[in-house]
Amino acid sequence: MEHPKTLIEATRFYADPANCIDVIKQMRWPDGNPICPHCGADRQYWLEKQMRWKCAKCRKQFTAKTGTVFEDSPIGLDKWLVGVWLVANCKNGISSYELHRDLGVTQKTAWFMLHRIRTALQNGLWPKLGGSESGPVEVDECFVGGKLKNMHVRRRERMKKIQVNDNKMPVMGMLDRETRKVRLNLIPDVTRETLQEMILKHIEKGSTIYTDEASGYNTSTRRQANSSILP
Picture 1: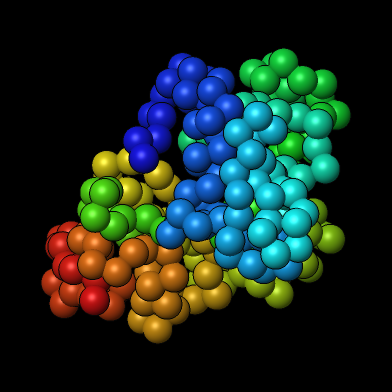
Picture 2 (picture 1 turned 180 degrees about the horizontal axis):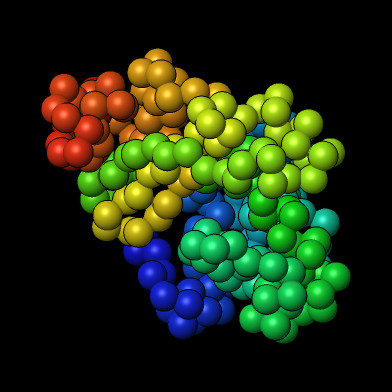
């Protein structure tokens, strides 16, 4: 499925309820076969007029939102998915006030949406990068953070417990060159084992990756990026 690359494309694409359902379906059930969130059965009937499924086993109905962070919300998937697009594509982050202006919802609603979207991102409920229908993936790590001496005493004591390498925290980033999707993850260290575990977790098998010596796939110098095929 071709995902929107600009905000105007995202707004137009997600204005169609069928597109919204297809996107959620692809994220939740990559093989295309919906699973009942009530009993776990894999045989469903699609109810066209209600735009929902009915389980052949327990006879209960469910929508694309059932069992997701979008559940129990009167907000339509058109606004939810545009919100997800904004959060995922804003390099410097996005506030609830920006979200409320962009989506035309109240600031309180935008705050609620933002926290649910962040929860989904934190729990890794999105498909892997790379794959046959996508481009090569760039992988690298860096250290982010300020100096402890410049922090408030309470924050300083809290950060002392988790920061490493001259008061900074290791962050690992992955960029799909074709779809421009980005994944950022806090990691405990930059050892070979940790970096390879994150690569295998977030990138599809058989993908071409561009990385450096630190990620454990290449033996070149750190300044020269090389490509390799994920086993």
